[in-house]
Image (cartoon, rainbow over all chains, first blue to last red; front, side, top):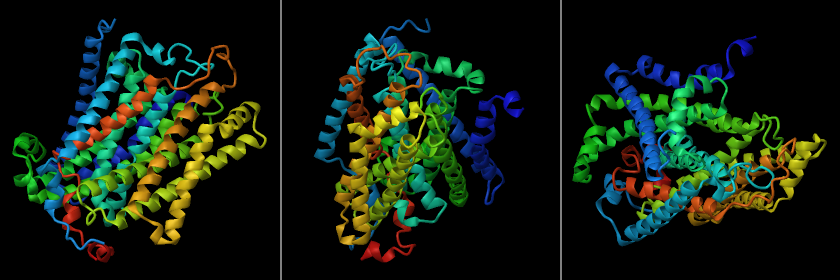
Length: 74
Length: 444
């Protein structure tokens, strides 16, 4: 029943694969020793790097498109 | 063993001088990398048809070949980072601390090369971001490719976060002796740093190591990457629950081999035999032995179940695989690897760092060729041979083969650049060099 109502990728990625990531953030904010400022720094580094990876990839691929004249998104 | 005492000056040496050989090797590798990029440019200009991987592919429908095999191989090598970090942070195996950052950098370089292979295998790489991001809410529901992108991004970013957080301590203390012109980078890394955070950061990286040791081996190379293949019922060479453990055993083998080559190479170049000691290299060699044994054991499981009384489609792919020269050589090399590790475990005098590097290179070759063969044979022997009429056997084109030289050169170049920017050995490793039971081996 669950299999039919909740798509496999949803429970797999957000329910299972996500667990170690949730554990990291919970550990940072709730574990000891802790300091909210340092925990926020960790989250900021994480989010900055996610953005850097995907924006960097986007710019790289747009450059490829420009050099090889793929015609944008056409 | 060396009588030298490890000091912070040792780990700063790569940043303070650049020898002639560094420049020559850098130039040669840059030449290879640029040459391969030109070849990739040729492929972009004329399409994947130049590799025979477009449309229905060759050899009865092989549309994935060396590129995807090499992608899996690079992700496997990237597992060295978390194995070493987990050993140090979670299990207190401090003797491996000198190789921890090297292994994490290997993770970054390995994942970067794996990502490069995805781009290289796309006919229109310009569409990768614009097609993945907007469609993600739908594709994540059922697409193993979307799961793959998710977990690889998480692994890459969490490892980079780990690196940044641990670098703060080192950069703050060593900054005066690091290149002045890179000051702005060091300022960004150490923004808001205070010594009070050291203990908290140590705990935060402990949590990171805990999260990554579950995410990367169990859910990435033992999860979403094998699921790209293992969930396809029409491909008997790929289908099955054993793919998770089998992929993982091969990944861990190549990861340890990569760390051994890297650590031993740098030890020789920078005279670090008192930091990356024989004891450390020998310990890594023994770990390589364990993972190689698992690799061979899981292959045995596949071969026996695939040959004894398997369904016809499984038997066809298995019998072809075990007689294929590429497979025979790969498994033969792994037997040589195991024989050496077993011999040096019984008789320590058999061990030398150079021999460990040699068998690590054999393991890297064996894991790469096994993965390429796995990808190709899975496509060549489907349950229903819809593409059997497509002519020609698959053999990697020179364009594909050039990518191996290109990506290896790029990965080494990444290291050569990082060597000039940050200490690649943690300051803790030379500060705490006497804190475990290997003290005598380090200093005697």
